[in-house]
Length: 298
Image (cartoon, rainbow, N blue to C red; front, side, top):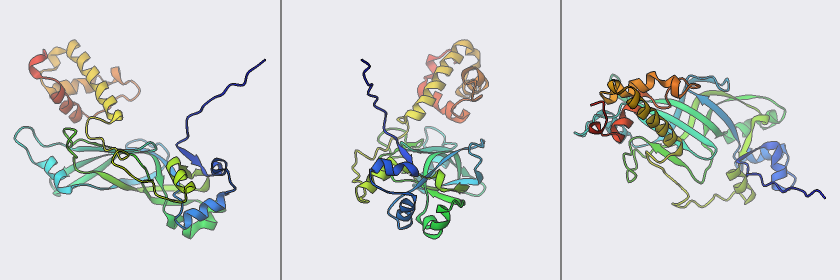
């Protein structure tokens, strides 16, 4: 006799609108969901897949920008002042990550303009639509019309991780980076592209009650603890050890060593064709990890 197999699938992190009724178990059609979004009781998102230099989703982007809050003075000092031990950073690498959203950007100092400049590196995952879109275009959206949104905000999240290059040790908070929205795009919004996160769906089912945030739930991971970036650094360090053993005469300084890793990128990262970190980041990483007196290059 054949036995029925029990398969336990992992939970979904987000749902398309047409599956919400099945998830909550009561009648709730598209018109209901759009109505709740219009009156501010429901947060609806779209999925963005954008990377600097690549046309991922064919999204029109005229200067992708990340809106964020951070300590402007501390960021400026990190990019311009020497502390007597090492030169200032060439740029600050920052990232915000949840289970459904990733923002990665760099901040540099423009000495000519005497101001900080932001450069978006990667924008990936779910971002929230404004309630105004639904309030003013409710009927047209339901009829299938498409609207180009230029600003998308971060969706609600109970937990997030922050990667901050200015946080040298775990006890430091870096520049207190927290992004709030992205702009500079023309995202074609339509009903069939709309999604609801698991976090928002649970909040909606529980009567739009905001989840209680605790210190343990809000995870701010400083420089060195983000899994995504730890993997990048590990790959670079593995390549560094190989290069040092094979070409010790080309590793006479951290700068030469980093350049040699970059030149051999196709050997280690054939699909990308380049290292996962920029040369300046590789050089700084090598200087933090390896003692010059213990490698044959010096």
